[in-house]
Length: 395
Image: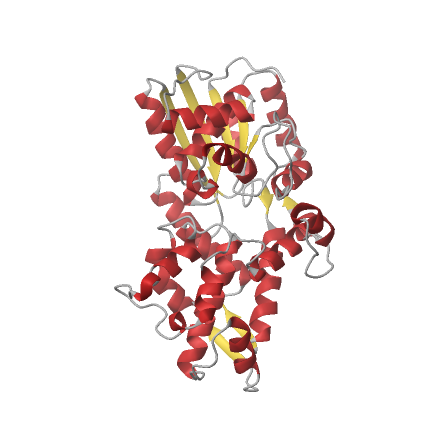
């Protein structure tokens, strides 16, 4: 790929922008149906699609957080209707208690979720943040879970959602997302149940073939640079030969479906690699941290993933220099969530401190009213789809 230090750089979020992420939403819906069904909940509102859009509008982008938060809210609501005895402590015991009441429970989650909104976007690990509000038995100013927080289920739901070994809910979700065969390869453990990958079965490409080809031609000619920026789990950087055990290639699955292997990818596995080398938790440098945007901007300009991770680390935590970037760059960011916009806005400010003139353009890709509103509040220009936005950028 010919790169001549291009001055126009494009950063693409994957889910909700380049792809209609029905695979994650499918696994999200299946997981909720499974766990809520075990508690006798026959109907819940909002539905999975609206729940996903709600969470993303608050800055929560991972189903690893969404699912346990929905379950915690549901259990709290059910307990307010009929409180189980103190002996009912675990999630499994709560499921059995409410199921054996013989009632087809129906819940409207919206009021309590709206009440939680101010807390949801405060930390990247949204579920763990809610748990930490009650840490050491010190109640928060507003007690969101007056009944559930005293039970063991509260901790098991919210505390360690990134622990694939210990968190059953995350483990089952991952099994659905990547399929049982790949699950056993990645995590070196028996799959919870046999299934195919929802990513491979359900994800749909939003980028049109003509626009894909036009973008490829301009990147190959060195007229523009581009990078994929995602929170999806991925393998380590392409330039390194490392043990891939525990690295789930969900980003690579998307890239293959998009036929965009010719672009650098800055995803969770890449961040996990540099964070491991530096002794940091990878979620600390995931968007909305400016780290991921800094690495993506550099990768769009240079095409090298690992060098871009080192660049971002040095800029934020070491003796950095803006090597690899032109003195003036035009950066276009295509996102459907505010967290990516926040990452890029902060990254642009940091690069300006190093003397780089950054002309930043924020594009909000959405048709959902609530998401459009919060994207617009961040200064994004709204487009209904990625093709409409790209036509105005690379024509």
